[in-house]
Image 1 (cartoon, rainbow, N blue to C red):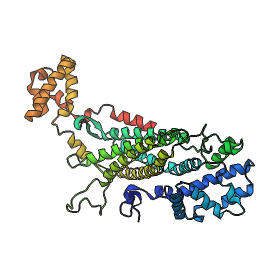
Image 2 (cartoon, rainbow, N blue to C red):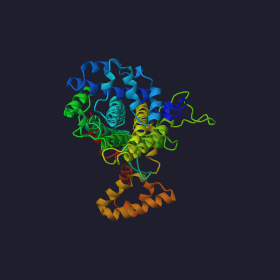
Image 3 (cartoon, rainbow, N blue to C red):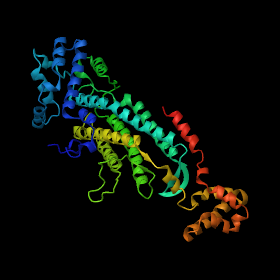
Image 4 (cartoon, rainbow, N blue to C red):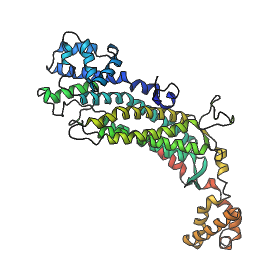
Length: 448
C-alpha cells in the first residue's frame, strides 16, 4: 500500500495531481533512462561507433513495458547500484547481441541526470500552463475590481485605502516575473549530459562531443559546454524557481486565508455544497484549500534545502549527496504541481465581497485618513508640525473612542485652518486611493 503523502489513497489528492504522478514515478524514471540510452545509441550508430542494427534493436526493445520494474528495484538493492540492473534488464531482451552496445561509453550519472531532466521537461509546460492560468485569473480580478476600494494594511493594521484591483495587480506582476524567470531558465535547466566517467568523453573514441550533441538534439535538450556531474547549479536553479513560485502562491493563499476570517469577510475561497468545515460545527466554511496551499508552499521550500545540500560536491562526482536529488526533486515537482493546481482553482473562482470591503474602510471612524488630514493641514502650518498635531488628536480619538472628525473639529489648531466640510471631504476613503487605478492599468498592459 502507498505510504507517501503524494500517493496515499487517503490524502494523495491533497499533495499531488495525476499529471505529475504520471511523470514522476518508477516507470517513467526507467523509461527516461531508456530514452537516453536509445538517443545515445542512435547518435553512435550515426557516427559509426556502434552497428546500426544494434541501435535499431535497442530502440525496438527500450520500453518500460518490456521489463520488470519491481525486479529492477530488487536488483538495485542487491547490487547497491542505481542503474546497472535497468541496463541488464534491457540487455536481456535485446536480440542478436545488440545489448552489448547499450550504455556504450556512458556513465551512470550521464543517464540519471539526463533522464531526470527529461522528466522535468515533460512537467515544464504543465508548470507554465498553471502559472499562466493563475496569473490570468488574477488579471481578471485586477481589471474587475480596479476601482473597488478596500483597506490597505501594514503591520497587520489598517494603513490607507487602496483598491482590491491594485492588490491583485501586485500579484499579477509577481507571477509575470516568475514566468519570465521560467523562460530565461529553460535552456539552462533543460540541458542533458553525456560525457562519460569524469566528463572527459575518453570512452567515445574522439567522437564524444559529436555523440553528445547528436544524442541531446534527439532528446530536445540543450548541450552543455562541459560536464556538469559535480555542478548542480542547474538543479539548484530549478529548486530556486519552484521555491519562488511557492513563496508567491503561499503568500497569496495566506492573504485569502486572512481576508476570509469572519472579522474581515472581504474574500473567500470557492465553496460548494458537500464541503465540510467541521465534524462538530456544521456552520463552518473553512479555507481548507488555501490552508493546504500554505502547507504545500512550505513543503516545497523544505525540499530546496535538501537540493542545496546536494550541490556541495566533491571531486568529479559525489554520489552520497547526489542521492538526495533522487528523492527531493520529484517530491518538489509533485508538490509544485499540486500547489499550482489548487491556487489556480482558488483564484479562478475567488469570492469577493465589495460591500464588506467598503464597511471595513470605516472601522476606525475616520482615522484611516489621518495622512490626508496631516498633508492638508501641513500646507497651513508645516508638515512636521501638522504630524505632531494630528498624531496627538488621533491618539486621543482612539483612546477616548471619539469619531476622528469630531476630535479634529474640537481642536482649534485644526479648526482654525480647515472647515468642517473640508474635513468631511478629506475623510472620504474612496477619494484617497491614490493612483491605484492607473497602476492597475499599467500592470495589465505589460502583462502578456
